Image (cartoon, rainbow, N blue to C red; front, side):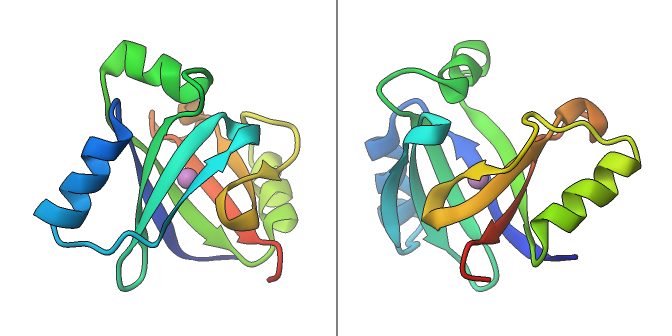
Amino acid sequence: MITGLDHIAIAVPDLQKAIERFAEDFGLTLSGQEDVAAAQTSTAFFPLSSTSIELVHPLEGAGPIAKYLEKKGGGMHHLCFRSDNLDEDVERLRNKGYQFLTETPQSGAHGCRVIFIHPKSCDGVLIELNQPTNA
Ligand code: CO
């Protein structure tokens, strides 16, 4: 079951500059930065009352975010729903014809298991589903 909007991710060409914008200009609190090697991303999270803003930047200049930035220069990258049973939700959605970017969930930020639904299954929006490994 999907239980909430976990975060919205923005792809950024300059991570430090974007962190300063969200922290100093917008007054949000940076909860932490994390490199997710499996996803080839550097991330920074700004939790809000019931969700977070995630900044995503290519880790070591490579990976899917690098390609996104080449094409678009930055922008709204994905939104992420929190699930309390990821495997069940993936199976349910697969049975309805949804396509996923990977066969199985991968490791994401904060030690979550994550999987992405292909944008062509959701009117062009990239949607991530995640489940904390301790839930
Ligand atoms: Co994300």
